[in-house]
Length: 102
Image 1: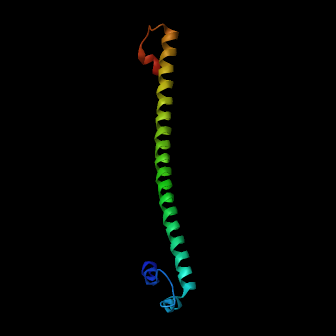
Image 2: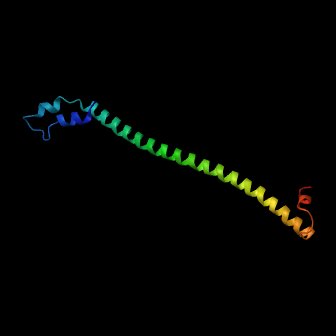
Image 3: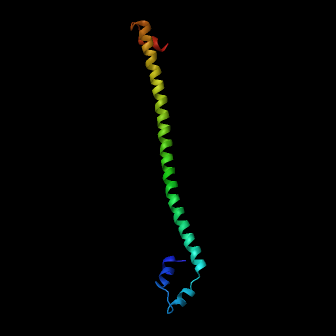
C-alpha cells in the first residue's frame, strides 16, 4: 500500500460534503500498513548500526591480530638482546660473538 498516496486521498477537513471519502477508506488496513512501515524503518536503522558494529568489530580483530604478532616479535627480539647482554656481562665483552650462539 502506498501510504503517501493514501494519505493524499483523505480530505484535510471532513465535513458533511466530503464525509463519503472517509467511508471509502479501510482504516484497519491503513493502520496495519503504517505499523509495517514504521517497523521496516526501524529494521533499516538497526541494520545500519549492526553493519557498522560488524565493521568496527572486524577492524578491532585485525588490530588485535597485528598487535599479537608484534608482541611476539618484540618478545623474541628482547630475549635475543637479553642473551647478548648476559654474554657481555659474563665475558666482559672479550670473546667471539660466535660463542654466543653455541
